[in-house]
Amino acid sequence: MAKLLRIATIALITLVGVTVIAAVSSRASSNDYIEYWSAGKLFLQGANPYSAPMTLALEKSRGFIPNDALIMLNPPWAMLLVAPLGLCPVFVGLVLWILLNAGCIVASIWLIEVPPRYRIVACLFAPVIASFSMQQISPFLLLGFALFLRFHKSRPFAAGASLALMTLKPHLFLVFWIVLLADCVYRRSIAIVAGLAAALAGASALVTLRVPHIWQDYVSLIRGSTLDRNYFPTLPTLFRMWIDVRLVWLALVPSCVGIVWGLIYYWRKRKSWDWKRHGMLIMLVTILTSPYGWASDEVVLLPAVASAGLSSRNRFSMEMLTCLNFAALIVIAINSHLSIWLPAAWLAWYLYASWSRSVRGAGRKGDTITGQGV
Image (cartoon, rainbow, N blue to C red; front, top):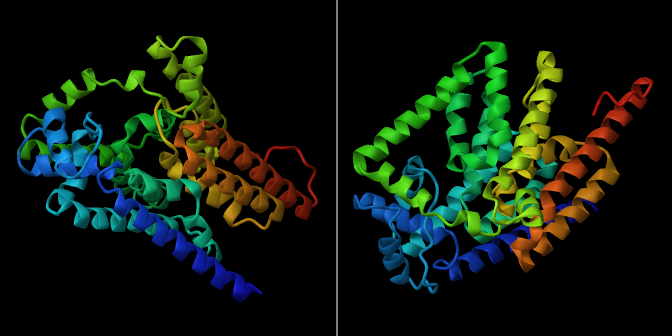
């Protein structure tokens, strides 16, 4: 039965992979990939990669239907990542983009040491599938976090440099950044901060050499952005809509609450702080309170899911995760805007899985249950 189940699982993941690739290939000019390809093309030409007219002209030439350009909003240092796409025809670039994203997922699964028998299950994590279907840059965020978790003790400078990948979407990780800074200050260690600063400085210098006006272009884009009028399936967006959608600053209130909680949580655990253990809850709260984000960005929660459930023998928590993941896949497939409940669901499952695991561990040792393991 185990062999049959493994064969069936491999067949399923292959079918899902083929379906995803076929779907995104047929929509190369309609998903987020087209914005990365256009930005890479304009960047290599020395033009403004954040120009709406130039971006729209490129996208229209490749069959883009909407009349508003899909512009890459990532910071200028992200140009180094998308520049190779600009060297390729649009379809060849899409294949390269899919392979890069797949490489990030596979490398991350290896870095966070998911047991071999659960690696296929990790590949079916709903945000992983969403990243491919949306052709998003999110798998690079996961790779940066996985590298940080792997090397933050043994090679802190390299771990800090790897966090540059998470700055592709820095707004997603407000709670994480503050707690990380607090940890560096408490330990009087600047290696991680120095690594991050060096990586960003090097990348920024390279893109500035190619397009000297890129920073002015980016600032102009952000100033004229309509993000504050867009709907995002996040708790802060719901909070803002519930009170007054016109008050943009309300979207930052959940993050501020998350930062206060994160600092209190860190201070209580500071002497035994371990990013591989305590950092999982920090990341879950970070994504829950992020002002802007999509279901694909939740791929950074894969280490938390792996640490709490994939390596656990708690059968019931795994069954719950399977049902939750299946529901998430359906919701994302129907309409990604309906995924607003997902971050809270991942957090609730994580707390249950961690609690039940600590209870089982205490029971095996014959200890009295005090709840300190959660």
